[in-house]
Length: 273
Figure 1: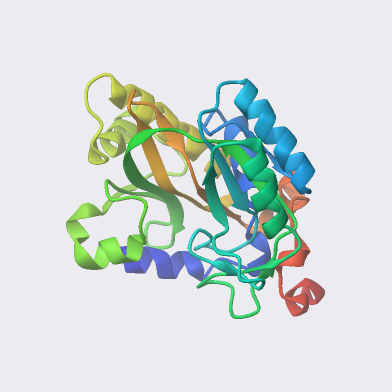
Figure 2: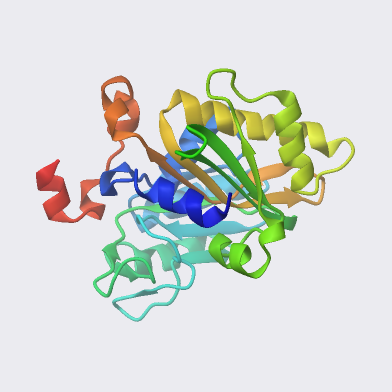
């Protein structure tokens, strides 16, 4: 099966109001035991500075500031004010404050937003991690397999469609029986496809299983981690995440659907829903 088929099948199931902010996705992942960076969301530059100071007090060496919108390409985007970049790597709480002021209240324009951009009302501040590898991992609902498929690649941190086009052998897929659930044999196989070796295989497999458990328990249609990074010590961190959910499961996923941010959506879609 090619990745293109997986993407088309998945996109056919996604609606505009199934997206969640990165900080919400990471909060969910933490609840399921997935390793994410320490941090908090902020509504004002002052709050962002306070969060940054808390992280520094707990030995954070780098501070990451991310504008929260429902679109990719934030790091390479620009604001309607001319300010460049919706993702910043910073060193001090004062720098976080200064950059958050440039982001909050203004519209961030990326390759996915259209020319009008999306207004930034929240920013995520979290610790940086030093990593040696960037990987790709996604769990999708796939019609051909009538259930979940795990897509992995050792070439993370870039557009997975480009990877599939330039080097199809770098894309690995693992179908999972939705009735039986993921097995340790399957999670280990995925971990090895990502290049993990020795003692690090078990930790990676455990993180993959935790992501799968989230996928099933929250009625997700897609969990995409890009990049999934490996620290110098061999630990796996989910640095950036996109999770979408099955709208037909709203009746049993009330908490998840309360996270919906209608300010990020087309008013016509909001009215129709």
